Length: 242
Image 1 (cartoon, helix red, strand yellow):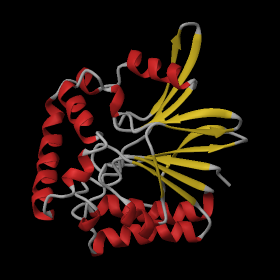
Image 2: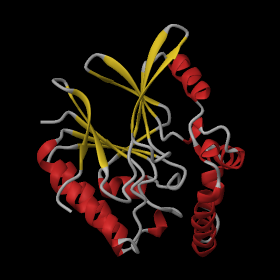
Image 3: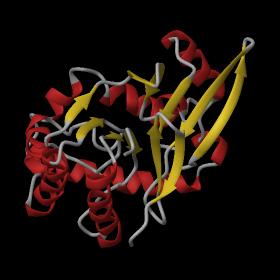
Image 4: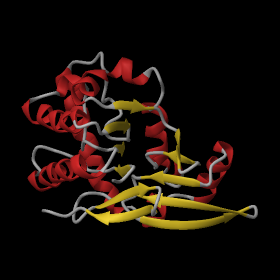
């Protein structure tokens, strides 16, 4: 049995049946294979608030609740697309919302969990938006807007994100110095994050110490799962059964 599975950047949307199918396959797999699941942001493509709940998103919540009913612990960290996901969805899905940053312990080692966009400091426009949306007052004020207005604004976010594809990779990538400084401040040697859609392990040297950076997969095609158990440590596994 796997102790923990880490996923992010599913970008679930009712118009994308393929990713919804992958998510349903994951639910079936996780119910038999893991003790806990950590979702590190951008679970939904956009989320305008818990009053966005409809038949489709309730089905997604019910799938998560099905895992919880089997004894799987579920944890959720907000990303840049779903920072408005709130207690109504969390209660329906039976997930625990984590603050960013969160540090957990696996195998006696402290592990830092992040969405990851904090470290993309060359993308000045995104960092400005992040500072705005992560301000503790912003969600409360934004949720005061009528739902139709919020829905139009988050649709603009979808259009804006599509324009990011034209930005150079260096602008969208993690800046190692920003990441390593934060890891040093948090007193951790291992980080798990999503956002950049470049899955894999990178080893960094910083002031004579070795730091591990695990980046999670997106779910556009053949997603990878980050798995941990005490016997094998961290490993990437393919999501099968599509």
